[in-house]
Amino acid sequence: MNTRTVSDHVGPASKFVGISAAILLVYAPVYAGGRDAGDDSRHESSIRTLSTHADRVSGGDVLVEIDVPKQHKGKHGVKVTLNGRDITDVFRPGAAPGTLVGLVDGLVPGKNTLAVDGKETKRDSLEITNYSIKGPITSGPYQQPFICQTASFQLPAGLGTLGPPLDADCSVATRVDYVYMSTAGGAFRALPSTTVLPADVAMTTTRKGVTVPFVVRVETGTMNRGVYQNTMLHDPTAEPAPSPFTPPEGWNGGLIAIHGAGCLGGW
Image 1 (cartoon, rainbow, N blue to C red):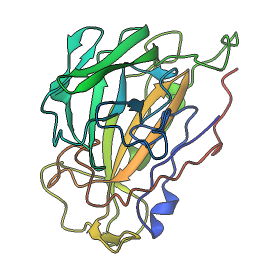
Image 2 (image 1 turned 180 degrees about the vertical axis):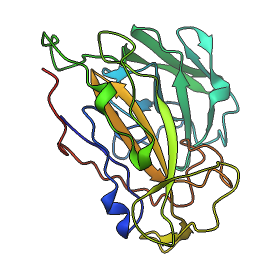
Image 3 (image 1 turned 180 degrees about the horizontal axis):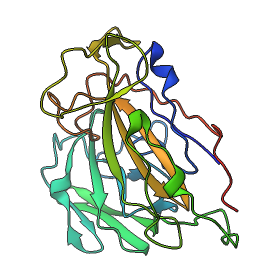
Image 4 (image 1 turned 30 degrees about the vertical axis):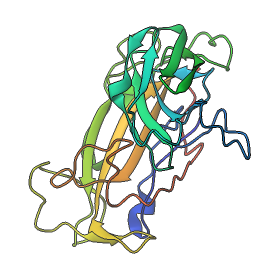
């Protein structure tokens, strides 16, 4: 059983640890491909998945980076399709010069073809294999019998449990909760509103020296018959929802992955 908890700060937040069984490294730059060293071709594009390997995507979406010719200063002249459907609009200039980045969703189960074409770009394509979020991908057939324990999984700050599973694979609806640290200290408290911060909200400073409200976004869901939690500093009263293109001010680009934090076996 594994736990992976996103942590972007220093201080007492280390007390806040989720218990989980599986987690996808969403939006973390895991390069499945990689450009050839010294490749300076002006008329070629290459495609790579960032959030996971192209042959083991799950849940129907994946973050993708595309190399484009140097003369393309955005996505001008480049067309991107998924299984023949134009998805060019989901891409925008990436952080690296000469790249486009996009969150590609709508993947069908099994094989998908992502293709790039343009007036001055040689057509290139990448096969993406998408699996169910329920799994399995590489772990082999499910063990039976298996007991779902979502009803006993405790959420932080007295927010209750995940409730009974939706199916025999222990699935639950993904949920997002917010907790905060009070200036009075003690354990995390449930954030009473996502529009106005409470008067007693504490502040915390990241490793990059950025001081932000000590408000933690907690995403809880299930993958491959296990519960996962992602946590990160995010102020919902002042910032847009986190995405690859709108990271919270309190995120320093780091990821802390914690495994085996007391998760009980379900078999």
